[in-house]
Image 1 (cartoon, rainbow over the protein chains, first blue to last red):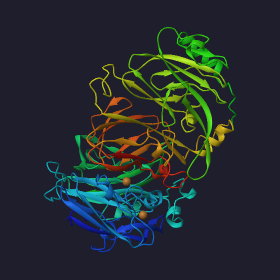
Image 2: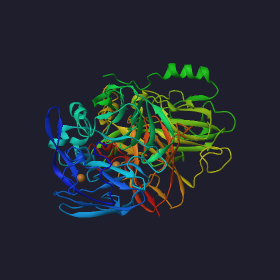
Image 3: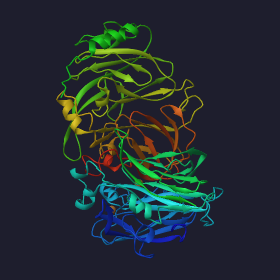
Image 4: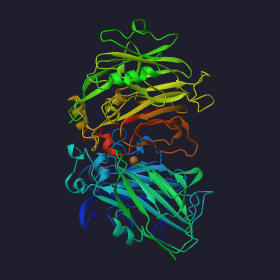
Length: 300
Length: 324
Ligand SMILES: [Cu+2]
Ligand SMILES: [Cu+2]
């Protein structure tokens, strides 16, 4: 199950890590990250700091994230899409920020089973771009990890793709927003923190299934660009978005996600072979592809 | 660089336009009032007047800089939302849209999909008569050098009310208790500088760095009663979003999922409640918010450069939903 569904619990811990890294163009660049201190002390997949740890909860349960800010600058956790109350919304202007080396326990009731997002909301244009985000999966109330929601589709394999772009100048050289963050010029285009070579070799990202197996793919869009996802021509069904089931699933061979959106897609490959799923990042003004990343889907 | 002459295109477009719609549009010499009585060729019959003026303004932003805009603004007592002109009438009504062009460039107001006015030369006034389209949300736009027009500020909103007189988006359509108009604009200040100098900007390069909602940038937005979504728990609030910029916005709600009900006045039924919505340049999107909890919640684009003033956070297109 590619690292998903192993731990479903009500109470999690997160810490800020300001010395993360992301590999772009063959060299390491600074990244800011959220890590899970209780399960390996790294970010997503337990082996990287280019993307925050993912957290799994059960629908309807009272839940918490005990956040310790292991840095000298303020951060927060905004629970994007969980519709939490104002006090737990993680926005400095309407709730509060967690000061350097401070902590706060965010408390909320887990909403409808589905795919959600979390991120820092302090000086957001920069903190978000530098990597301070991750994914929240809400499981059905019974905690099952092979069904998307109560009464929803079941699946044999589950994969999570966080889609993001990086401007390495921002990552390496900036610590606060200002004229230099006026224009975001990404030179890194990633899935789960990895460019094509890494994303194709990464056990958390590349997909290996047998013919006829149902794959549930959760897409979380964390770029400032629109992203177009395709599976090398394989058809898929769009079954949920932003934590809610689609009224009627939509058949597609490519799908565009806006910044902050989530879509869950379901597909069943019936032909053996190696496919190259791709994410293309688009320019708002010209619609042109400004960069892309591929991973691997092996069907045996 | 191409210089924009003050009356470029006016004569030929006007002749072509008047040839086609001779009895429904006119140009009035400079110095003449736009009051309907004063039209040289007065629109015939009964109609409602929507008068606007085009002006040039220097607007200041939170990073301390000033940007030159061309703006439509209310004229002779017409309405506004935030800074931008706003007009509403019932579907099927006859309306005259009149423009006093106090800017230095020829302008051609339009309501895309509904009507295009004649080109109104700099310093002159002009008008066009049209029938209010089917109930829904529409943009006031501008056709002359259109690609530059939105980023330079020329925009507004028009609402067509259903003939049944109810608080519904259209006859029998989604009902609401209150409504807000949220108009997103983005500007690449390099284009504004060119337009201020009556030059065409480099059209191949556009990366906006100033962002407004109803003409305001945060925190001014938070002080504008038209632009803060004030509401009560239990209400259904209609948000008429539109975007006259070039950014393909992805607008995120804190605190709530909401329901898209129409895009460009075409009903949308394929989507569940979402927390993030596409509002592309040139489009209108109607969203129903069921206010399920009290509190103050941000509503903002998730391309977060749009929540800055030339990169400085938090300015730009940030507003709040304030629910009691
Ligand atoms: Cu932060
Ligand atoms: Cu967010």
